[in-house]
Amino acid sequence: MKIKRMALTTGLSLMVLTAFAQGVSAPYQPGITQDAVSYWLPKTQLTVTVTVQKQTFKPGEFSRYAERYLRLNDVKDKAEEVWSITDVRVSANGIPDKDNLYTLAFPQKGDRPYIELTNDGILAAVNVRAKEPAAQAVPESAKQPAKKINPQDYMTEEILMAGSTAKMAELTAKEIYSIRESRNSITRGQADFIPTDGESLKYMLESLTTQETALLTLFTGTSESEDMTFTINVTPDANISKQVLFRFSSKLGVLPADNLAGEPVWIDITDRKMADGYSVDEKQMKKQSSKFKKDTPFLYYRIPGRASVKIYNNRAQFLEQDIQIAQFGKVEVVSGTLMGKKADTKITFDTTTGNVKSINE
Image (cartoon, rainbow, N blue to C red):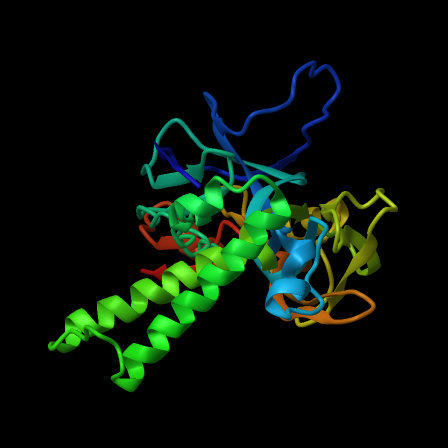
């Protein structure tokens, strides 16, 4: 989240504004005005990242001859795709809480503290430059697929010139047996020519194995795997129980929550009530504001609550994790003594949870 740099003047008092005030025809944008600075408190949004693996099977050209020529049983002769969930992670980020917009008014004269807001208008820091948030961890990328082997590169002229698929399969099977016999002769020391140095011997054996593997795929088929990631955002305002996060099918992969072709994957978000109470209402805020003198500026921030997040389906539990949630906590006021006319207190705020990260006088 990018940080917007601003230098502002300290204020006389704090006023609570609403984004939907009468007469406003466009959404309110926090930032600098002639008389004040306005900012949002953050609301915590959860981003669920789901990593799935798609395995694709393609039957071999000679699959129906696998048992006849190579005595291979249970060889599949139909293409198929199989999807599986390999990883589920959850991360948090802050978005503007449109129910908690505040304005810090300032006089014409007085010291000018340094204020930072994010690009979204969330309060980030006072009298200090906030550090850019670290990038969220993402699942490891899929491994580079192995280089594909073309079995036709290892077919003899006789195989390629055969007049039917059955004859090609028969000749290919004979070539596989010949390769196996050559490898066995080398390993037993019975071949007419055996390399004298280890590296050459190793290369020859690996080459024979590559040839056999390539030709075998004409009977057994090939399998390829591909990793994909999907993200779903959830912004809880209260406890969530067994809400369908997405649906999943082993044949179709990740599906929207309303697509009944897949089985549901649920999310539970349970308030752990680590902080007392919830976001205070307007009457409570006015009561808090009345404790301060009119010429004492102050700021609102959040003490976040903590929630237990669980993601699961009928077969498995993919994740269970505790996460701080801004909107599950309560709103508090930075002490007026720290925001007085001569104060140069340095304060940084967590733009995901709204909490005070550090205070240095």
